[in-house]
Image (cartoon, rainbow, N blue to C red):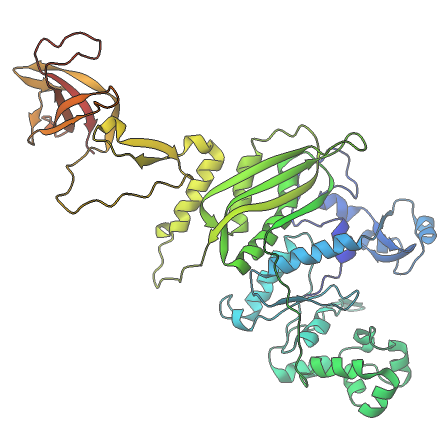
Length: 525
């Protein structure tokens, strides 16, 4: 995979969709995609142009042009200085993102190559074949804010040369070169037709054309001994690797042991959409990193770095913490949750940079597909729903029951946040099943009146079970002496009622007069 616009995309990411409003008029430092396309931009290194976008080329800006020449053509051309550190950071993000497809990823060490190579032999069937895999890789890299040219072949070096072939404009229109070769025979034909320009790092293309060699096939037809004496052994070694004549050794990209990355935003962002467009690069890199770790994130923090108003002033940051009920490495799901969180954040100052770090993660191995899958029955679907509710309603408003060792129903449970791990249940001795309990327990018992020695709740109640005696709470001053029954009303409604045994003070502190008092404590579904 080749990134032909790396110097420009590292400075001005070309997001696939508008990134939201900005606090200043459209300019090259704005993340709005449409505005960036309309502005002529040129990237310079050592006072010479190394890359220009379409509008700048239309004005006459070309490769190698001096700064003064660009200014003479048009004062509207925005000139940016090349940033090799930003390019290296973008290449690292691309490599991390591509770990989602295969663990065998390497960055081409050749200077100015801007190429990442992947061994996808073991991933073709998983992602639906080489065509579907190429589309998935291109779409994922496009979300990083850059464009990719993808070549596929039987050798890594040959596929890299195919990917670097530019689109040509002819009198008949745009001609797209063939970049895909699955069979060795087709790979051989495509490589033989490649121009000698792909050997510019190993030999002078003009010198090769001067001796009558315009394609790689013609270079290979030359005597190897004479070619080695004049150009060295590096050229022949590279050709042998591309044509699968000798094995190739790679230094595979290794993901860092922890994930903590940051990036500068191309402008002053004051909207949720703008922040999410930048965070997408970090989330995709995180997804690939988690895939390499065979893990899913359970807690991460997105740090918004606000603009400094004074030189030397400490940077003001806003952390946005995301906790998940189940481990996940789905970038789309994480982006959705961060949107829910960011909708509640007040931007007191423009955001100029983003940072993302992982605090906790758990092992997350994908489950095998079923013959007749039921999407609603997957545990991940429930986890995504819970994560969305927590992000939208708040951690304290999505709760789960936490059983306690107490016989009193109102004290046998404590509600805790859904992301809090429950206590390990104690081993229960084998014996009869516990008595039936209602699904709905009233917040406080409701007193019932008695008619003809029977409790009444919108009608007389008939007892269906024998009494279940509960006597507990003497240790904390909340003594409960009750006999519980399951009762039924005439319309079939089942109730959970109890009677308090006489001889203890009532709730208002008065004596009960030696009579049983009845209460409604729950309702059955």
